Amino acid sequence: MPERQSSRKDAVRSREAVLAAADALFSRRESPEDVTMADVAAAAGVGKGTLFRAFGDRAGLLRALYEARFEPLRQAVETGPPPLGPATPPRDRVPALLDAVLCFKLDNRRLALALEEGGSSSPYRAEHYERWHSLLRAVLEQIPGMTDSDFTAHTLLAATRADLIEHLAEQQGISREDMRTQLANFVTKVLIAGPLQGVTAEE
Image (cartoon, rainbow, N blue to C red; front, side):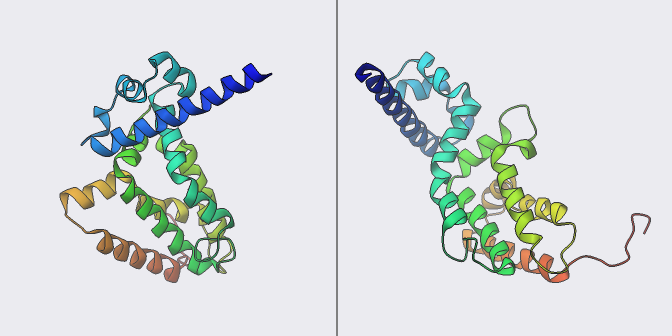
C-alpha cells in the first residue's frame, strides 16, 4: 500500500511539473505551434513516454492546461456570487458570462488559440465549448420571451472565438477594454431585440 501511494504521489508531482512547464512555455513562445511535446518533456524533466501516458497527445495536454487555468472561473460560475454565480438574474448573468469568457481568452490567448485550432474534430464538439454553450442556453431559457436559445447561445459564443479575438487584438489593435465594451453592447442588443415575430425562412 505505501508503495502504491508513493507512486500516485509521484504521478501527481509529474503531472503538476508538466503542466507548470507547459504553462511557462506557452506564455513565452510567440506561436502555440512552436511548443512541442519534446519541449514540454524536457522543461518538466520527464521522458516523452511519461508525457504521452499522462495526457495521451498534444491536444490532451492543451486541454489539461486549459482546465487547470479555467478552474477558478469554473468555481465562480458554478457556486460563486453574482454576477457570475447561479443566483444572478438571467439578463445580468448572460453579459457577465460572455465578458468572463472574453477576459479568460484574452488572458490565455495563445493557449485558447492552440486549443481551438488543434485537432481534427470540430471546435463546436470540444468539451469546453459544449460546457459554455449548455450554460448560456440554460440561462437564456430563463429569460421571458426568449426563443431559439440554442442558436442564440452559439451566436453569442461566436463573438468570443479565439481566432477572432486574436485578429481584433493583433490585426486591428483593439484594446482589451474596447473589446469588452463592444461585446457588452452586442450582447445587450441581442437580449433587447429578442425574437423576430412572424419571420420565415422564405422571407
